Image (cartoon, rainbow, N blue to C red; front, side, top):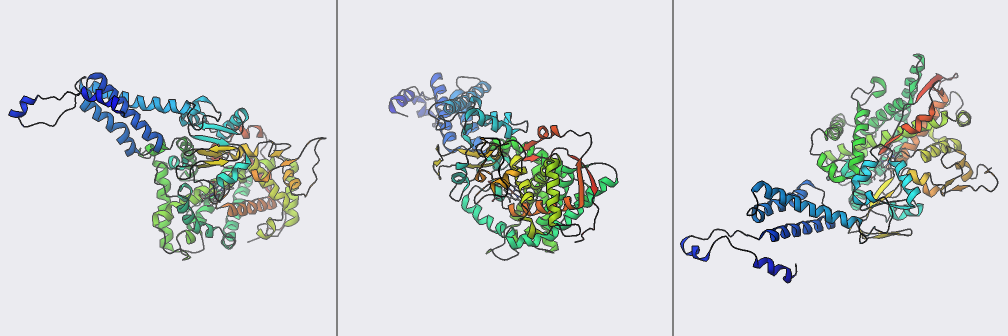
Length: 591
Ligand code: HEM
């Protein structure tokens, strides 16, 4: 503060004792007594100083907020305002002034032309607070909102005070690639704590790379071969579950059956077993809990501070705690029983002895729980959407079945993975499903920090302290990346792109296929570590289902509403999908 401002303030300070009294009584601690308007001015000044701390460091922790938002006005009320007001009023004035100053300075800065993101367009409310986007997307349709925003404002949109969304495939490498940016802040809010240790939420790039090593080994090619038997066993069980529906004369809800399959499988993979949803049903309502948890986490991902606060509310944190407790129980049991097969735990718990020391139990438990959630929701989403797309396009169904039958005639093992990568139509169908319905439609989030500094992303400068989103759904539905039939399920585009089929468009129609824009598993050193397993599992299940079963949509069910019912709670939620199932005649392969 310049001296010219400070001097009059000091002159106005009157001490609450006279010099004469010093001779009679020992001195009491001096009490600062400012005249009324100066006391208020100090309160505003302290508010502005705290605002600068918020602007620079963006503190989100509860104890930081206590020191910045509660302590200063409490001191001001006790020492500066108490001579002027009754105590309750002094407290109200101090808190009101302090927080109103911080709020107004924050909002003015965010909407002002001096904000480093001021040049990027976006709705006015989104500049003010992330609460605006959280509210707008609380209907579960964030991916559609983002698409509309880009259609309105262009390739870069300011979707928060310090956040942009970029619809430009040239941004993928600088943002997600090897020398890209650290993870963004949304995981802290989703996990309801700033100290979550899950691999997926590690912001520190070096720590992430260190923790990722055992995961990479758990998903290496030899490790994946070791999982084939477990996948095959569970896939056979899924076929039996679906066939049972037909024997009972009722359609199967495909999303639910497949969800049970992936959950049981991921429990096998992570902890060597422990879940039997296909046999016993979802007795612990795991799927409901997971979907509720993800729905709540959608809002908290936008406002990490809110998630961290909610983490202290026992009822709100219940779901997260249940998940962590489950992971810990399963990890303890797995340690007690030892390993029967090389599951993920074998690698994550350093049973392969490749790391210097085994990780703490809490870390393995939390990562095991992550594997179950990350691996079951996503793969089941792709499988269910693929079946929906195939069944609502009879030509695609027949062509896919013909390809599967030609590779695996009745009696042959349809889960023989050595043939799957050659099956062009199968892979086209899976890719096209993930293009239409990427399981994480709003994509990946990364952020520049003060340490990384700003960076250039294509034609854009991203200043330090900016969160950057690459929305997969929007990239996939951009005609500059995929056309014609951008919004239509058309697997042939993948065959045309790989030269296996000729493009037969209308006169003058151009075929566009930018495969670099297609990143359903994300990209770079923090991409989906389970990509290989997911693809292996999806191909095995589809081949087995189509070889052994005849499937069709239930009579009277209108598929038109399917898209409307798709919600995004981080991952796309599978709508109700009733399917009539019949066994196909022919010899049955036994594994
Ligand atoms: C079709 C299925 C799947 C899709 C589309 C998918 C997609 C993704 C995406 C988009 C990410 C975020 C990466 C980022 O932040 O940029 C991710 C992360 C992750 N996924 Fe998957 N995933 C799938 C299946 C699986 C499976 C089967 C597992 C196995 C356990 C798995 C485990 C993980 C893990 C551990 C991470 C965190 C990686 C890291 O931070 O290093 N995912 N996944």
